[in-house]
Image (cartoon, rainbow, N blue to C red; front, side, top):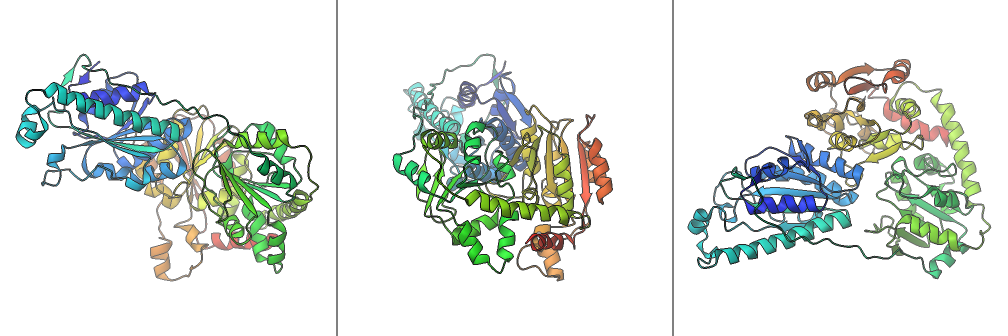
Length: 584
């Protein structure tokens, strides 16, 4: 093995190894050479080379999203670091652990006109779990320190001063990495290196001071007041946002699914299933919005208690409903933050959702008499029957394409959904309960969906399918610029010739300005990109060809595959809007 001669580089890599951070995503550079050498020469680490830093950050986010463990990013100094910001913000709001390690120039070379320098310390400020701004070693490149910062060195005790630097850096690294691991958040480690950068040793010259944070929190319990309120309430609504697969035992889901006083609203990204759960929220809410009896229906749906867990909710319609027809009590269950999404939060119970449900249904003595579930299940059943009828009448479109695709995704697949219309269409249709669903809903941006999916696919036991829209795919096309795309990776690209969601949102018109600046109409396809990056390409533009292609699309292949589905730009929005009118 080879080790950088710079103590700080050795320190960082040893901290990462000791804390179990094995996935390292590196973008090329010179200032980060000590880190590149230290990580890539150590067989413990799985090192990935991704040139585009924005793609690299989302790639690492995918690795961490799938594993639940931090992945590390390594970049050079200057603007390279700023390209990490979209993924850092996504990780912050999605509670995904990332360790961002940026190489920096010495502080005396910042803001003096030296090349490739910016103010890197605290650069992520309000979207980071912790910022560790490390100190430069005093025993490396001492001639430059004596020239530019002689006050840093006590000539009689250089070793003592270096020990202070080492102690400070160890403390900051322990704090940053422990926070990322235990609080599921991104952290930033900024490391200044002076030249020479490429010198190596055959043996490590230091042993860092390692501190392992132990989580001593006891299992949570639910107090009698909440249990009593839950038992008495006749209308309880449970709303689940983004949720990791297998985080709640089916035993407790069966309990809540069988409670006549509960309606359980889920989304595909909730990753929980029961035959009594309402898995298409908009199909329930949207027809009520269009009804002349809207106020009465919403009052009847209004819950006494709202229980939420998981991350962010996709459905805008449920947010609008609960903000206008809020519950008497809103409990959010989760170990980190509680978003007051509906402006009625009563309590934040810092425990896993499974602990809450087991408390409630272990201690619950009797079931309250209620027809809450039965009433709304009849409404849901009526809407779903009408949906089946509607699907037989419409022409090929985004809506019909998503329905066909949802029916034909193989069991046990990992499904990655891009933003923004993609994830919304997907919520309208049920998926097999064995499919694990992910989406970057922390910031809900279209950037980085492909990169995240590729990163998340690497260690998955099953194949991965990414369903994406055209703008999201072309925006993140550099995601394909790497050597890590598995042969069983699949992409279904819904190409409707622009930002189709803008034709659905308020403010749509048919002017040239709308098509150019909102919808961003285009005539691009993915064929040339697939040829350049080595993916098998195929395309369809109608129902029968899509159904036929999906029969073989998921079979084993020698290359990853992309299927481009062309849909009618000017008709998709009308078909979707007409759907809600039809079922109402």
